[in-house]
Length: 272
Image 1 (cartoon, rainbow, N blue to C red):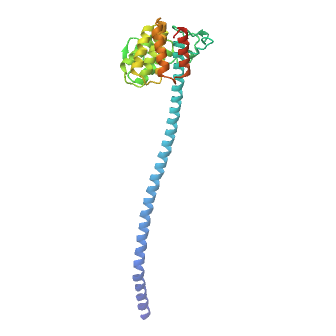
Image 2: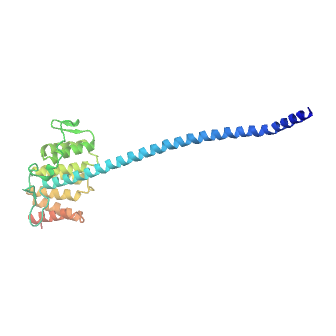
Image 3: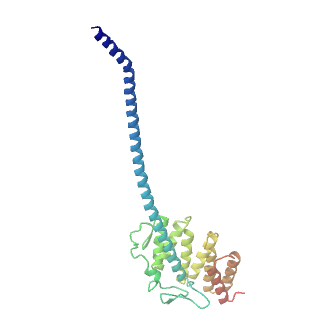
């Protein structure tokens, strides 16, 4: 009996000694479990964030591609529009050897038919529709309410050789959006259309307004050139010479084609 009592005493003492250690181990396990759960939640959140980051990167790549495509199309459209404008006023490719041709037609003063064999008109998007536009105007010409869309709309008529509606559209544009960044270009193209249609007095009025309203426009020197051209066609050589001389004084660094064209015009009308 004494042996059993002694063993019971020893086991009781061992349990009393081990109990705090066991309790501490359970606490450690619970603490580790809680920390593991937090780590799993954090990892799950990071995984979701990485998925979203990858999605955003793909969206950015797609949008970047779209922007690059639109930029290219805009540059191409501007090149076409500038080529049409040059042909309209009969000043493209002018050199000492004479005028160049557009699709077999000689560029000359007055209206130029861009619809017959013209490379610019041939490349115009035939899907352009006029009847679906809703906004400013009426009749055959109704500008969209958005200024950029309205400019493209008006330019579409010009690219297709529809000068009358192009003229009406750009006139509406200048009136509807007097402070927009594209208005100087719209007014400039309106003046070129007047020149192309032989409406030289109207062209002179438009280019005088352009010079007065937009003295710092990148095409200001060219506006002087076109104004002088309009005066020359109106058989007002004195006024034309004054404008050409003013242009050369005011814009000594004007683009070479503009300066060369002014020199040719001055020679033709015998400016002193």
